[in-house]
Amino acid sequence: MNHNEERVECCEFISVHEDIVKKVTEHLPDEELLYNLADFFKVFADSTRIKILYVLSQSEMCVCDIAQLLNATQSAVSHQLRTLKQMQLVKARRDGKTVFYSLADDHIQTILKQGMEHILE
Image (tube, rainbow, N blue to C red; front, side, top):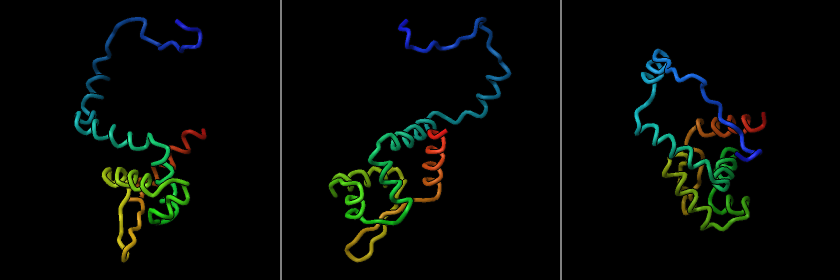
C-alpha cells in the first residue's frame, strides 16, 4: 500500500448486527428512487451548472445575462439550462421574445447553501 493512501477501517471480528441491519433495511428507499437521487446529485457535479444555479439564486435572468456573467457563450449556457430544466432545477418564463430562467423552487437554494456550508466547515 502507498504511504499516502488512507486505510479503510474494517471490523476485526465478522459479526453482523442483525437488529441494526433490519432497522436500516426497513427505511431504505427502493432502488429506482436511489438511482433517481444519484442522477439528481450528478447534475451538481458540473461547475458551470453550479455557477448558473448560483446566479439564478440571486435573480431571474435570461440566457444573455447568464452568458455575460459567466463569460460563456449563449449556446453553452443554453445547453446547461436545458439539462437543469430537464432535472427540474430551473424553470422558464416567457416575456415577449425573452425567456427568463429562475430556480425551480426553494429546495435548490437550500441545497446550494447547505453544500457551501459543508465545504466551508
